[in-house]
Length: 409
Image 1 (cartoon, rainbow, N blue to C red):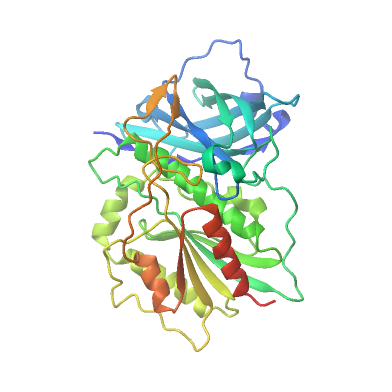
Image 2 (cartoon, rainbow, N blue to C red; image 1 turned 90 degrees about the vertical axis):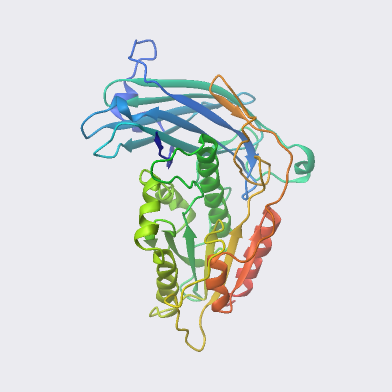
């Protein structure tokens, strides 16, 4: 029985001279040992920043590697067919975990943004043993159906990474500072338990859902100019804080692209059994830090997928509040299901066809059934905060306006 892993790559736009030497000197006509792999591409779809979001999922058996110190370099070129422009080059590097065990299958996902147009992708992975995995595919980013009234924020025939934006964002003002803390939950619904094998489509969804959350975070940062943002990334399932930085900006978003990496996500079951209230304690601790900070923020914003269904916070997850606590809000992303749509990302159905390493998904839109408040919503409610369901870009826009009204002017 295999344990699947799931990693969101932090690939970034680069230039040839900045590529690793082994990749820069790679001769495309030279014979190399092939690396057994499969690469699936995601159909471009509008994300919450009104950019076409696309990407890929790589699967490689880790039985090929023994010992420690193994490394992958990922490089790919994206060329717009309708423009006389040079290709945009992306790169990333991954150090494989130590103490690899037999039976593991690595799943690595990457995400990037497009404007309208058709694009050719030439993708490659080179490992430290000189083995190469190559794949090519074509992407068609276009508006369809109800999307045709949308205004895509990226110009046609444009390619960018997670930091792409149209104009510079105003820095926080020292004269009239506004402070917001964003608590981003990196827990993704992979649900891989020890001794079980997750359906591959779940991992396609997890990579894409993490990309969607990052696009929501980018939109939030872009639409709150002049605001000082403390970003805290945590994983309620793995019961740990993963990242914390004051004065976080959208230019630094690639720093957290790896935050949802799931090389040990299969072990979540053990964590939950060993400490079943650990997730609640983490949430309470995060809230307490913000409420009792030396300089509390004006607003605290949770962002993430639903977490902790059918559970009630234990008494131990109590948060003592002062007379004037910060405004608490929870932007709960409720993706459409069961398919990928122009308004969000979802797991492909078993009927999806994979042809030549490429996955295209087109299915009807249905909403997630309405359920009671999840765990984070209950914790926010205890602090007289507000939960806002996010299904589509318009919902996110309203939520950001609500956050803006809670800040000093």
